[in-house]
Image 1: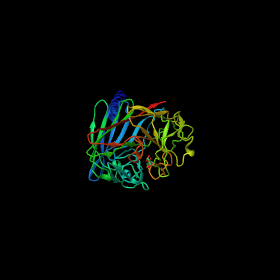
Image 2: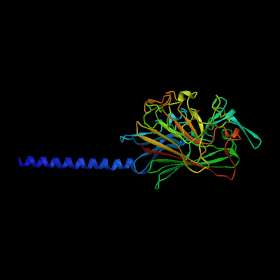
Image 3: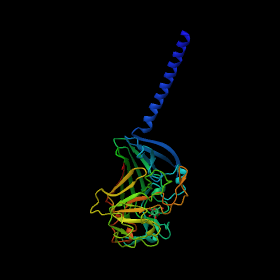
Image 4: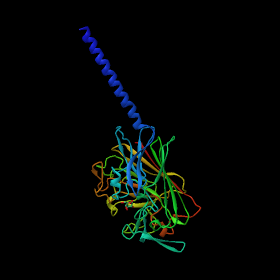
Length: 378
Ligand code: GLA
C-alpha cells in the first residue's frame, strides 16, 4: 500500500513536471506571438522578387500586417468591445489572390490616386498620355500602378514598430514624366494608431497623389454591410462628378444633399439618393496642411470607433459599390457594400482642373503627406 501510494505520488510529480514544462512551452510561445516589434514571413515571389508579409505588433498585442507587394495592408486586428480580436481592414489570404488584380484592397496607390480624365494631361506645354484602364480614364496610377509592384522594405524595430517601403518609378513609367523616388513609412503606435507617411522626390515636374486604399469594416466581419456604420466628415463641400466619375470642376455645398456628413450619420441613410452609391471626393474644412482630424467612423455592433487624421485637402469616400463577391475573405465573399474606403488625397483629375489645389511636384521639392487612422472603443 505504502509502495502504491509512493508510486502514485511519483507518477503525479512526473505528470506535474510534464504539465508545467508544457505550460512553460506555451507560456514562452504565446508572448512571442504578441511581442511588440516586427516579424516577417516569406509570402512567395513575383516579378523575380521576393515578397514578404510583415507583422507589426504594438504593446497591446494588436497587429498590423503589410506586404511589400503593392505596399498592401493585409490586416489590422484588435479586440472589439467583447474582447474578440478581428481585422477592421479587408485582406486576402495569399499573394496568389492579390495577383488576380483585386480592386486595390489595402494597396498603396500611385503615382496618381483616383482618376485622370481622358487618361491625359498637359504640363509645361507638353501632353502626356496614360493608360486608359477605367473606361476612357486612367485610374489609380494605370495598368501597373504602385499597388502592383514589389517595394524594397526595411524594418524599424524601436519604440514604435515601423516598415519603410521604397520604390523608384522610372521616367515614362505608365506615361508619367520624371524618375520619382518614393518612400512610405507605415507605423503602429501603442494607442492603435496606424500612421502612414508618404515622401517623394522627382527629377522632372510630375503629378503625384499618393494614398492607401484600405477597405474598412469595423465589425470585423464581412458578413455585415457597412450601411449601419456612423460617419462624420468635416467637409462642407464636395466635388460632383460626371457619369464616368470625373469631377465636373464644381465645388458644391453639401448642405441639404446626401453628401452632408458634417454631423454623424448612418452611411446607409441617404445612399439610395446617390447614383451608384458614394464614390466622391470631399473637400475637407482645413485652412492649412497640418495634420488634423477630418473624419470619424463608428460601429455599435463591435463598439469600435475610427478617427481619420490627414495633412491632405481631400477625402474619397467610397462605399464598395463595385464589390460583387468575386473575392473572399477567409471563405466569406466580399459582397456589395460590405466595406468602405476613406482615402486621403488631393482631388481627382487635378492635373486637368486648374482651380483644384495643385498636385504637381517639381524637382527640388519634397512631397510629404501624413495620414493617421486611430481605433478605439466607443
Ligand atoms: C476608388 C474609386 C472607385 C473604385 C475603387 C476601386 O475608390 O474612386 O471608383 O474604382 O477605387 O474599385
